[in-house]
Amino acid sequence: VVEAITRVLGGLNRYPDPTNANLRQALAHRFGVPAERIAIGNGSCDILLATGEALLEPGAELVYGWPSFSVYPQLEAASGATGIRVPLNDRHEHDLDAMAAEITAATRLVIVCNPNNPTSTAVPLADIRAFIAKVPRHVAVLLDEAYCEFSLLEDPDASVELLATHPNLVLLRTFSKIYGLSGLRVGYALCGDERFAAALAQVRQPFF
Ligand SMILES: *Cc1c(COP(=O)(O)O)cnc(C)c1O
Image 1: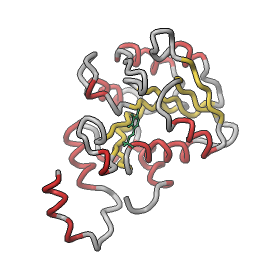
Image 2: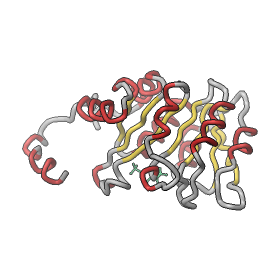
Image 3: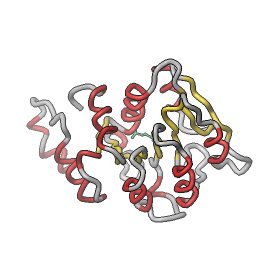
Image 4: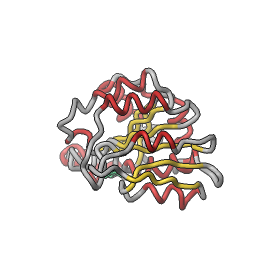
């Protein structure tokens, strides 16, 4: 990666490709997800905040487990939406049944961090699958998989197949952790519906 970056330093006078076409194409090839359903961000935190901007507003609700990743509360602060924090169970795992019970007509977004940061617990894919089946289609489910490649529970790519049957699902991933590239600021979202990627593009800064 350092060699590849060194090779392109002479092009820093130009803005980057605003469509991130090369990376989206490579990820499309890697995951078998069409490039139109892939969004890139300055780290996956950037995609998280853009998701809040695209989906949330005062009166809307956002459901997530707690304690979990420290950035989720910022989505409430930035949008004025109401955050519903659902306590982890006594094994420090996401309580997906309790989360499903918090979904109302006002819910726009549910975030499940799997494996969870900071408790390092992971929910099996079968449980995630059953949870998504219960979530109404008007609610976006964002599965934050920043650490999925470290999980010993199952193949980190196993969740990708869920996108085919759940247009309201988004898998959030990053080059920061397993690839050790946090300083590069590159994250990506694999989306069940291209309209999610398009919504992010509408609220994102133009060049990244
Ligand atoms: C590290 C992390 C992220 C985001 O990291 P980026 O560097 O912005 O890609 C998102 N979610 C979780 C759970 C993380 O641990």
